[in-house]
View (cartoon, rainbow, N blue to C red):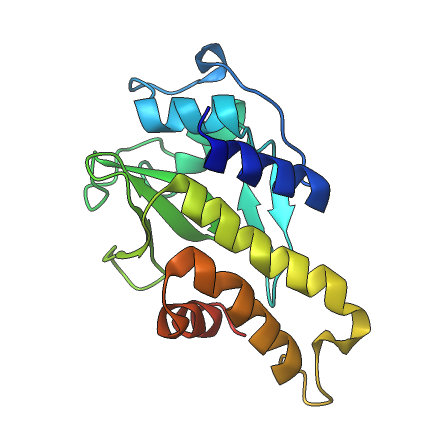
Length: 188
């Protein structure tokens, strides 16, 4: 395990996330488990993690539940019919109220899109799975540390905490503008 991965995992454990090593034998999918996903679940191991944020929490399933998360994206949730506008190269690895975070197998990037627009046109948002988890955990950490002070009287996010989030995201994303953009994307 790389030192950066070890440090990330320890930070997530310290934050209270439910993590455990998950082997490839837990995969329930009908396609081969991509190597990057196998490593992510083996080395970091998010296990049904709900990460708090403004609006619906971010949810990252255990490896055993990951294939079921594809329902409604890859195939129709009732009929099981394959949905034609979903690429074979995509796997939903997390969501926020039905808005998917999509692992693009060929590139290793994580894309994001909003549901209900009539078709999928996701945009890259994270360079990989570890960056996704580290960034989403920042939202959770700032949210939980802010307590009741998170919102102003008009129920917008307190700018003090928004700036704390941007400061936490910047080292992960490399640029302040990227951190601000991500905060805005998710209602901060």
